[in-house]
Amino acid sequence: MIILDGKKTSEDIKQEISEEVKLIVAKGLRPPRLAAVIVGNDGASLTYVGSKVKACNRVGFDSTLIRLPNKTTQNQLLEKVEQLNNDSAIDGYIVQLPLPEHIDSQTILMAINPAKDVDGFHPSNFGKMALNLPTFISATPHGIMELLKRYKVPTEGKQTIVIGRSDIVGKPISILMGLKTNPGNSTVTLAHSRTSNINSLTLSSDIIISALGVPNFLKADMVKENAVVIDVGITRLKDSSEKGYKIVGDVDYENVSKKCSFITPVPGGVGPMTIAMLLKNCLLAYNNK
Ligand code: GUN
View 1 (cartoon, rainbow, N blue to C red):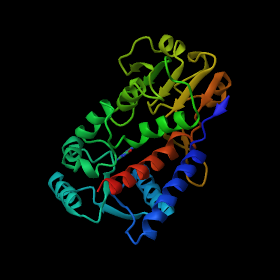
View 2 (view 1 turned 30 degrees about the vertical axis):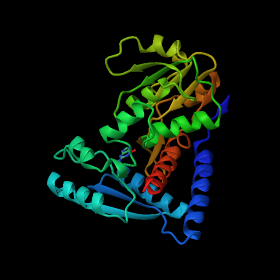
View 3 (view 1 turned 90 degrees about the vertical axis):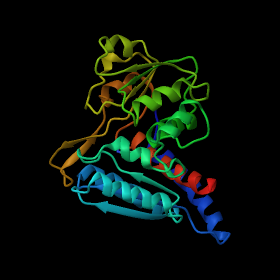
């Protein structure tokens, strides 16, 4: 069994990015700048955005963190988006999700200039991804593809099941795995809350990508021998540690890993890859200019 080490791989990628930034700066040019907008005080979102800003510093990017109060109106947020669209010092930016309920996320995401949409959430970028045209591929699915690529995990002709059909992970990774690419060229099933025979589907799959957010959902008796298991779940479970919680995935790692050819751990699997791929997208936005 081989552990797909997202922590190490993401460090390799960040090192590659920082080398490229050094070359840019050595030419007398400014480094790339990523901005992140966060509305409200959700603890997990603040942690994620904090990690993204920290990662910018690590690779030599400039960063701008914009914190807005929970009561921010949709129009106020649209104004901020417009401001970022027009700010030539900002190469790419993200609006952290989820947004408060009184704001329609789709309206906000569609207002982001696609050339600065380093999350790859705008319909124009999502569409290009589905057509295998050059674009910003959303960080989490991109991170999964990059892990599969760097570890040379065979995907061609394999049966892949994606569990969860979110716009951010399940839907895009189901498309990417089916593209005529390597990794890719896989036969994909997209399972979701209305799927009736999930156990028989996972049992017949060579690759299982779980993006549900339900701790311990995937048990050993749902997985065939030598399967590849990618765990995208990141759930905070309260515990007695100093932090007050621990991060758990969708997979019963201890038992499932014994049957796998490759598996991602949680933490240290897909999570760190997400941040590395966001930085890669921001560098692409900078270079596209
Ligand atoms: N919330 C959870 N994951 C993401 C992400 O990749 N981007 C944004 N903007 N919000 C998120």
